[in-house]
Image 1 (cartoon, helix red, strand yellow):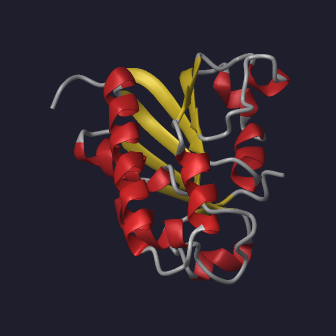
Image 2 (spheres, rainbow, N blue to C red):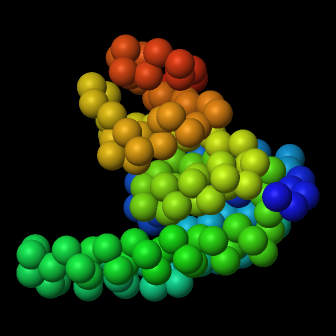
Image 3 (cartoon, rainbow, N blue to C red):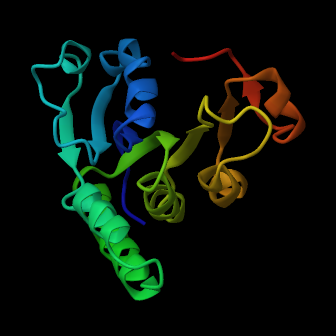
Length: 171
């Protein structure tokens, strides 16, 4: 295992996960930070991103997801091949920066980044989505055991994540 850099990854998919991450924008300037997303519209011109050190777009993730929606639901091979490509894209980005901390609001990008980061010593911080009030998200189910810290946005979620901290909603 090589040396980790003093970099914080802020990782999220487009949509609500991205909106929730942007609510953390005051943290971007406090750390050497990189946004990892599939939101191709994320640019330096966005006011919330002026403090971010870098933006890494996970290439093709949103296009792959849209293609999967258009295909027959029976195409599990396309689903798995998409996630394998996502894993290798995330691995390439992780190796480029070697972050000390990875913070994610979910969804698809969080799982491979967390796995890669955990294997190499990165600290893992998961923020359960605001949309979940009474049940864990699939991302939460998959990353719960490897997360160093979990935050929930509803007090009811503390029953499902007793190890988590409740700090209110982001958005």
